[in-house]
Image (cartoon, rainbow, N blue to C red; front, side, top):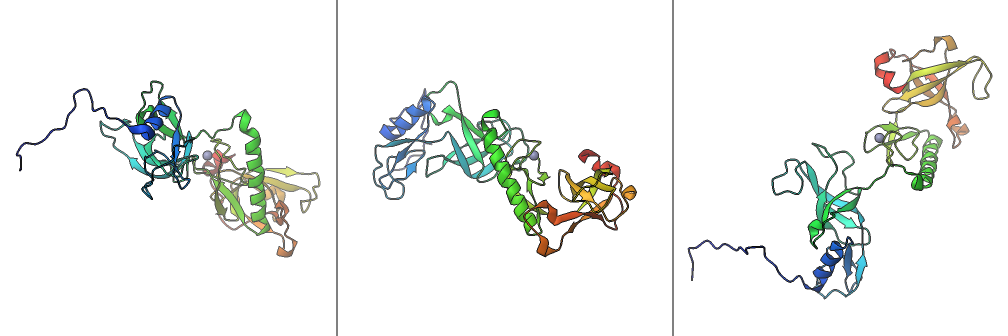
Length: 306
Ligand SMILES: [Zn+2]
C-alpha cells in the first residue's frame, strides 16, 4: 500500500536510543575526557569502537584499550566555505585520524588555525591531538576538534631536539661526503635551512623534508681576516656568509679565488670542492667559495639575510 504523505521522523526533545555496552563505554569514557578503543578477537583496536569486527563480523572482545589523545592524520578534506551547520565558522578540514594505539581511523574536525587555503603543514602523517570541551555530555562532540601537536621547543623537550639536531647534522655531513648540499624545508615558513638542525629556528618546529641545493650562492656579509688560518689559502683571507640559491639561511664559508679587497656584498659564488679522493665526512670537502661570472645581486634582495 502506498501513501502520498511525506513522512517526517521527528522526536520532540531529541531522539534517545540505547547505545549498547560498547558505544556506551566509549561515550562514557569520552565524557570523562578519555579515549578508548575496543579490541577485536583478531587483536586489532577499533576506534570508534563497534560491536562487531567490520572485517569478520565476529563479536569484539570486552577489552577496552586507552588510545590517543594524539594521533596521525591518514587523510583529510578541506572545507573552504563552512556551512551554518558545520562545527567551525572558518575554513577547516575534515580528517580521518588514527589515534595512537588504534588500528582504525576516526573522522573528526581538524582545526589548523586561521587559513583561507590548506596550509603547507596540513598533510597525511601530520601529528594532531584532541581538544576536549570543558562541558562534556558523552557524545563525539565532547571532542571540540583536533589540533596540530605543539612542536615548539620547551625546556622539558630540549634534550630530544638536541638529539634530532645531531642526527640532522650527521645527515648533512653524509650529503657533503657525497658531494651534495642538503637542507631541510620547514613545513610552516617554507624556508630551506642549511646546514639543517632538525628544527626551524624561526618557527621552532621539527623539520625533516630534505631538499638538495645547488652549489651556487650569494655573499651577504663578509670579513677580511689578517691572521693565518690552516683552512685558508693565504693571508689576508675572507670569511663570508653565503646564501645558497634556494636557501632561507646563510652559511659561514671561506671565499677565495680573488684578492680579498675585491670581495663584495651581493657577489655570486660557487662552492669549490677538493678533489674527490680527498673527500671525508666533513665540511672541509668544500675548500671555499669562488666568484662566478654573474652580475652582483642587488642589496635589496639580500638585506633580509644579513
Ligand atoms: Zn620555519
